[in-house]
Amino acid sequence: MTTSVLTLPHGAPAPVRAFRLLTLKAPAPSTEAPARRVSSQSLLNGERELVIQHQGNEYHLRLTRNDKLILTK
Image (cartoon, rainbow, N blue to C red):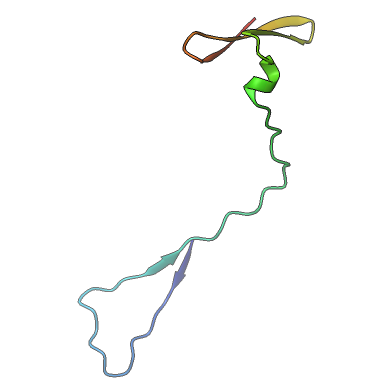
């Protein structure tokens, strides 16, 4: 955050109360690559369940009756 001091034009009435103008700096650009996006339809390919193998374990990605995704071990 930066603080700027503003001057009033010559002859302008002074404000009743002093104030500061604050500006926010833009965030630094991210150096990380954006996360890859995959649609659930392309993952499930018309099925209701998908088994994912990760570090010797199986995880089940299920599509519920209410169109929610649940991942269980």
